Every structure is written in C-alpha cells, then in structure tokens.
Length: 427
Image: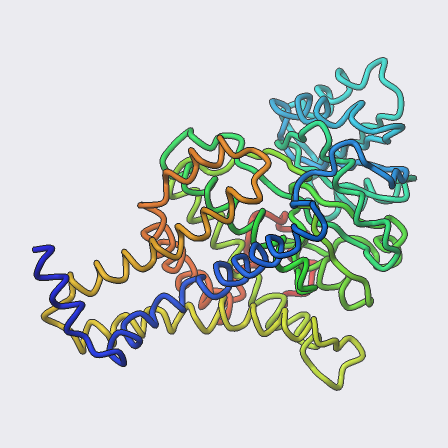
C-alpha cells in the first residue's frame, strides 16, 4: 500500500502537486509557520553580532512603573485565593483589586479572607452580575497605578511575569502588552493536550512574530497590561464577549502600539471536553465578524483618520485567514476530492504528511525560543494528531461564522447578562 502511494505521488505533475498541496495554504501554514521561521532565521543571523538569543530578561528589569492588578470574576470562589496568591508580593508596591461580579458561591468572602492582614488589596462586590466588561471597568475606576494589569480569576502567574509584562511600556507609544497564556491542565485530557500545544504555537510564538511586525491585534483577557490613563481616556471596556480584542483595536485606532512580552506567562484552565472546546471557540471565532468586519472596519479604510498601513495588514490578515480561508478550505477540499475520486486516501495521506512537515518545523522553532524546553518537548509529542485538530477547528469556524453573519449570535451569548445585552447596541 505504501509503495502504491509513493508511485502515485511520483506520478503527479508539478502543477498537479501544487494544486493538491494548495490546501495546506488554507490552514495556518503561511500565517504562522513561514513568519515564525523567518523570525527564527533572523535571530540566528543576528547572534554572531549581538551574542544574545531571545529569552527572559532575567534580573535586568529597568522599568518598574506602579501597577494595579484587576481580577474580575463570577463564581470563582474555588480559585480566587490561589490567583491572588500568585499576584501578591510578586512586584514592588502592587495594588490588587478583586471585583466579584454578582457571584453566588462566596467568591468575595474567599477573596476577603485572603486579603485580611495584607495591605493594598481591595475587594469589591456587585449585587447583580453585570458582565466581565463592567466588572473590569469598576476595577479600573479605582485603579491608581500607571499600568493596569488584567488577570482572570482562574489564572496563575509565574514569579517574574509582571516584571516581564511591563518592560515594553518603557516606550511611551506602547499602550498595551500581550502576554503568553499556558494551559495549566495540559495533560488532563487528550483535548487539553492539543490545546496546550496550540497555545504555545499561536499565542507564544505567533504573537511574538506579529508583535515584531507591528500587526498584533489581541491582548488575552487572561493576562495583559494597559496604560491606565489610556484606558480611562477610551472609557474602558465595551460590552463583550470578545471585549479584549475589541479594546485592542480601539487602542490601535487611538494611534498607540501593541507590543508582546512572550516570557510573561500565566497559566489558565482550558476545556477538557470537545463539547466545551467547541462552545468556547464558537464564541472566539465569531469576533472577526463582530469587530474586524463590522465595528472596526474603518481601520482598513484609507479615507479614515484611523487608517495606518499596519492596521490595514492586520485587518487583511484577519479577513483572509479567519473568513475567506474558512470557506475556501472546504470548497477546495471538495474540488480536489472530485477531481481525484479514485485516489482520495492517497491524497489525504499526502496532505497529512506535508502538514506534519510544516508542523515539525514550527515545533523546532518553539523549542528554539522556549523557556521551558522539557515541558514543550512533551507537548510536541501531540504533533501526529495536530493536523486532525486543525481540521476540527475549521469545522468550528464554518459553524460559528454564518451564525454571526446572519443572526448576530454574539448578542445572545450568556457570557453577557440578558439585561446588559438588551441595553447594548448589537454590532
């Protein structure tokens, strides 16, 4: 069987081979693999002159602004104390604000128990749930630090994360900094394992490349930093879901830069079942329609005062890979299967092995930049299964996008309380 497959591949004309392998270009290969490989090559070429390779700042933290950390959560009594512990005393004179968004499980009480006897901790509680955006805004209004850091109530920070995160803000033109999010429960299930590998590729490595290129358009809500004065000037967070991406696009509109601190890490829980993962990614994937295609499409309009070429590239990338390629992927696959009906299994095997080669190169890049190589090496063992995971993600995309395009499904998401949704403009 393998011999037959090899003969079939050898029999393909160059133009046929290019057409068949074109399907790989519609996943994420050109978006992630090529850019990160170029970045790694550039860093290797610089090494003989700089004698430095990418990595944590170690103890060389020159910029130490005052910081307010805001932790907003709903029904997170089980995790809030551990999250607060990972933040407290990890940075000089840090102010910590915890906002309980109408919890019914005693989250505020658990936070106050931890805060007892510790200075500079404020615990606030809303009687009714207003949603994450309003909870963050409530904390922002009390913030006194030059930099405001947002942390999810079920996340945990590494020892030097805050030091790493604030360093890019030395540049006064930078108003937001994206951190790296790691899966805390990476090996809780097969589903979690694949997500943990995905996070290292798309959040750690890919955002590093996009940040250097000046086209980063996201700061994870789980952990990120913002200039407090810029946040207050912009009015804080608009109603979510997807409030983190929306805010970053508004910051770009205001003329500020978004940077990345790849070695500022936090750990968060990822879904352990395929059903929960499907629901989560539907909520994430549709934001490209809500924000890039509707609310902030003026970022790509040359006649708009918000236009910059970096914004144009950012928008074009989102439109192409997150909308156009979603549908082209399935249409292209259907076309290839129709043209080569007798060789379907051979075709799929060819695509699988070529996809593995691309992912293998990305895994090498991950290990090159990794600050935890042993952990990442174990994650990379998921490589043989990752192409199937990517196809699953494309299926999620093709389900989520039309529901947002035609039905504005984000306006019905329980992530935002009903009374808030009813009082808010639906983009």
